[in-house]
Image 1 (tube, one colour):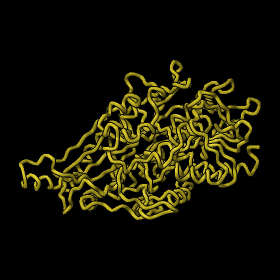
Image 2 (image 1 turned 60 degrees about the vertical axis):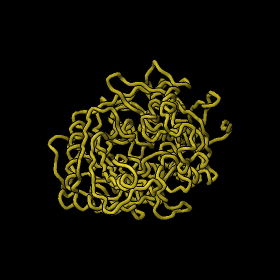
Image 3 (image 1 turned 30 degrees about the horizontal axis):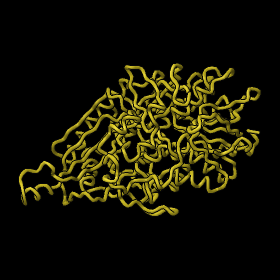
Length: 562
């Protein structure tokens, strides 16, 4: 047990994922004393199983009901398996509620140092001014209180540290970055890329991903073993546990406090300043306090807002930093229930069971409602596709003997695309505290209200139709498309419930993720997003965090938090 009672910290950071790791690194390396509170266990290379054969598992990864016993919701996330399910929260111990007619799968609730970066998909895409100023283009919602130029140097910094592979395309809606060499496209994907550009004007590019293709600061290049969600002994993908958090601790200025279920920001009623946090130790169930001059919440969008709601007091009766009444509203994620697949020629490719297994595929940049692209009459904003190629054996081959063996080895090639689309921020998509339900630790839980609107339903239908158009342009055969607008499953990209803005009456945070109401309280995860563009959010989460930390340190030098 770490005794923090007698130690004074400059900053308390809650959460050790994409933003929490960066906050600790940036501040600790600058000489500030940082306490990092993580709800989960320490992560270590001993927990990584990316090279572990399935026959070494007790149930051979063939008994999903074992996982579902304690993770009935988390197991809906396809990467939560017998290999790693103990990294995820126990859904029975940490429940949440939803209305019966609005199911919502709150997936990816990790309880390990590194948070979601242990299992994330690693797609790393920049936002553009077409995203930051989307309201100016289509009249819906609010613009972000910053521009691409404000964030560009921080995108550069983060990409060069993280190691993002990719290929420059010169698209204004998908800005290029500081890339390592891309992971090559397959022959089928190259064919698809060329045909999509020639026939449709769409851009198919190698996925921009936080996987190294060149060594970087002691981290090896990816060796294509495949299952990144089970860890990485060579540290070839970005995981905060062995990068930013490790750097912060190496500085000697960061104290990691594990198994700390933070549920309240402690306030000084006389000064309206945060003075620390209250947490429950997962192992002992004891309540403990940690004090600091500044509090930064990086717990993940819903978790950070849950802490703010549970921090309500006499001065902040509706939740901390909620004088606007906006806290908890405008929940967004990404719709992902439209796409398609089709068979492609082998082009000499051969199936194999032994790999190599490329960890990423290709990305189709947004092509609807762009600066120069076609405008949809049915929906605002847009979507992109993530795709890959499966080259498999012909397991349904007929016959016996040599004829069967030959037929079995005939490659079966399929190209798949899945859309990821922007969900418009709506007041009626929101979270609140369920006053009738507490978790295993006695902490009131969230009640989540989330549904698709007519814009998302129209967008998903277009995803399915356009997937067919893309595959047909590439000459694919046996094309199958799907569009399930009503499916209650969103991408694990939640954002927007403590939105940034210039007007304190309409927002919770400033452009530097500082709460309008409590000057030494910051929220540096995706909860501050005023909108949630179709690009994956993690790169922007990290860039915003570093920018906000630089602002915070500048304000400290000016004595703003004295």
